[in-house]
Image 1 (cartoon, rainbow, N blue to C red):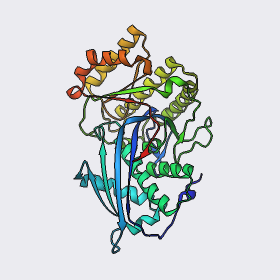
Image 2: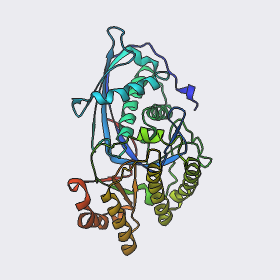
Image 3: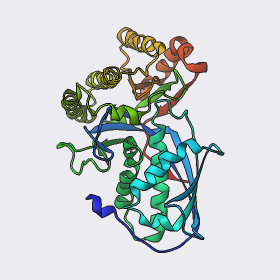
Image 4: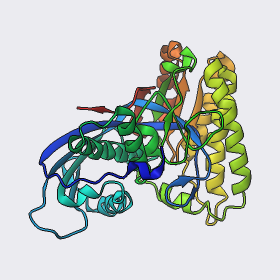
Length: 358
């Protein structure tokens, strides 16, 4: 599908309420750096999670009088969050071309997370995905003959305009965003499912998230992407990420856990190396992050359990491992790692199937 295929106009006026849950995702091959408006410098691929979710409710009603371009109020966990308004307003400005019918409505947007926001667990992704799905649900009520593929593709397309990685939070269990010659229909505008040809071991993969720090990041992901524009290692990074993606797509089909571990950990460390070598440079990982990484590597070498780590743009670690090692990994966390987590907090999650309406 092309960009202009997603433009839909309607003058129908209806009132109602919709609610969707969208998951976070954890990128295995990272995207870092943008071209044009919310288009990736390199393709990325991710596990869709199951339990780290944002629940968003949108109450919509016909405007009584024309005023602002988009009329909305936003609350998070039941409280107004004016500091989020600018990001939501920018999102509406970007998507207006594709959903011009929004001008006819007022929106009350209410959301809540099952995990800390702004701490490197892709909370922007799950929120923008859930909000986009709500808007698509409203559009579907205006256009009942809409097909499911169109619904999901446009939801991913809209999500991307709010948060790039949000495009990968619509479907599951594995999604690719960005053009790759190895996957038909892959493109820069919306994410596509990797397909059902993945090896069985990855269909039930576990992701345990260690909350090293739950404070808001000093440097947002948006700022980090901006700093990639003139990064000295940008071209090398694009080459590296495409090579890693090609290898990982093969691994996801064959179940090569050793190869999986090598690429996933390399991608995590490369992401944070790019941050440290930006101008200005910045560091999001904490001393405890590095300590736990070394503990994980030692544990893997001693036990031969195929556990690995990855990170998003923050200090919190994702432990990835096959389902059948869950009890041993949990024992390891409780005996060695929990003391390095903020208030002993960690989140048990797993690969999921994508967003759902509630």
